[in-house]
Length: 264
Image (tube, rainbow, N blue to C red):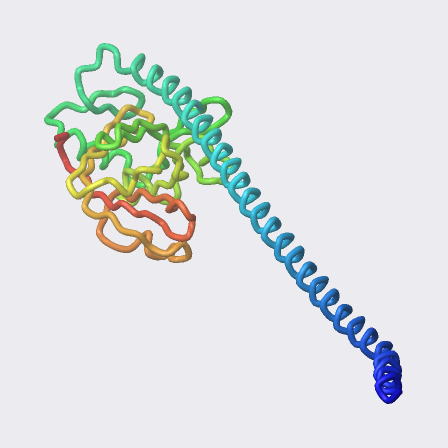
């Protein structure tokens, strides 16, 4: 009888504790579910951020590729336009030079006798302080033809700088070939001044004006200046200066040249 009573009390005690145990288990289970849900949300958020990062990366690569294609297209178009204008100018000069024995001529084809050195000095004296002659091709005014042998470049040079003009060909930024202070600029297209930084001291450059007078130069220095340091373009001892932007556009590549009195 005693045992039976004890069993009853144990059963009663267990029964009385059962609801509390179940409640505790429910709380514990709820906390686990909440923790799991939180972990799931964090994981999904991480995946969304990772996917967004991947997408941004892909978009940046695509944008860069499209920009590269656009620049490549502009480079190609600029090369074609410059080549077409160059051909017209070269043909005109060639026609005027037929039958002429002297390397230089002034005043609409009037020959100046003497050696090449004497001829060039006479040309500079004749044209001193005069505006550079220009020829019009496809609505644009050109003042000469620039040749850079080391880079295998032969380009027409426009009379005046503008952002529209330098999409076609190099242009005059300042000065005159007759005053030994000519500064030319161009885009960093491969077909224009994109390889300017490869020039070295002693490399030869020539400039032919629109009356057929040809001037020779040698490179005396190549440097990089800040994009906002325009005043430095006119610094130093030079007769001809060429410049363009670096690839990032932050700085400028500057090439300075001295005129030589006779062709190399």
